Length: 346
Image (cartoon, rainbow, N blue to C red; front, side, top):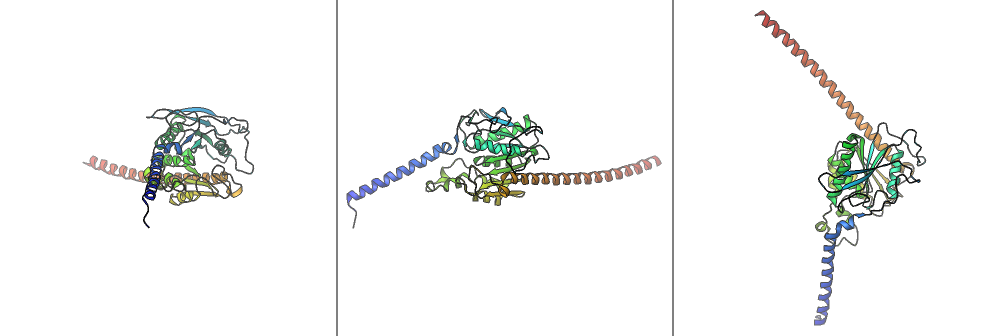
């Protein structure tokens, strides 16, 4: 039975409303996506020197070369031999055979003063690391425009330059640590600096597009066409040449843990992964063999072992080169002797 004129008008009106809503939502997602991805806060809620943490720190202000603004960071030195630090029981302490620095890149929400970040830094310091924790422009006390993908990459490079050029820290002494969105930023930095000591990616994703598509209410939109903030880690990780450790909670309610599994599968060795059964997105601490501090201890041993192997090969090559040089010089001296004797004979 054909629809009445009134029914057709109602259906057309419904279709028009649905189409207009869909198009409006697409435009909203396209123009406002940065404000959906980045959720900065300016308020500093906790300082490293808080009595519950009791970590010494130094405020640092770092210029972003070629761009406006400055990023704010906390330089938290490694614990001294005399310093009494609060520690997690039954966890490794002061594991480093040589000084190392963590460049800590936070996630998308809040700022570096979030207690979860500071607890993580406290654990890293227990292992013996010095830590530089930064806020991207638009976060905390950092100055500059609202963040986007290119800006946060530039901010991480500014922090790297501060460590290597201002503090004089060797690249191989720096381990880049990125949490959540910070994992994608840390990966980008590590690909740009293959001389870095290592990379730790915690609770991070394969790409922003896949993360958004897995949100049920957004899967109906053409995400690949709308998304300008790509953070395509699954593509970049194939170009990574530094040792990498992936950490992820199996109960992560924000980013599925299989994303770290896929990143791990795509990365080249040396690589390690720890999946923590009862851990979520924000709290990843587990005891015993699921302790991320023990995983980092094992990872550092791998880094040191790899570095020692490279040093041995370099010394072997140098020794071989020196032997070859010595032999060549002996032949040169012998040829010179005969040349001079024949010249005298004439």
